[in-house]
Length: 101
Image 1: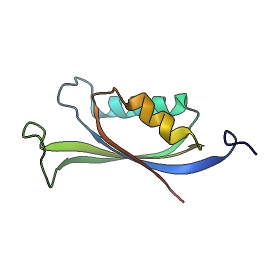
Image 2: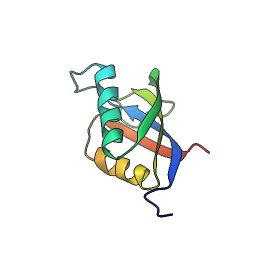
Image 3: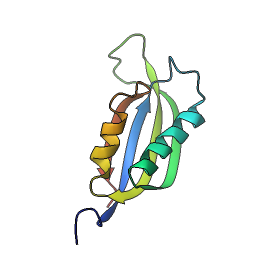
Image 4: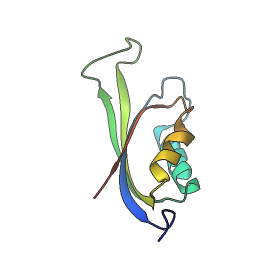
């Protein structure tokens, strides 16, 4: 079995920075789902956790962010491909992808 055929479940936790964006949060979340589909992933659940204040503010102009969790299934290479696709996206402030099992 090659690494491309092995599929695993992942949980991605994101903090979104929507300060300069005119899009609604649902639109941004739909774009994230499209990015996951482009790297051969199947999204099973998306949970919008809402706007939350940071416990430790690094930037005074950015004291809170929109927290989103996405559960998806994809190949072993999916987490690194997902990170690479979102590397230059200004709406994604933080991204953590972890194995769900």
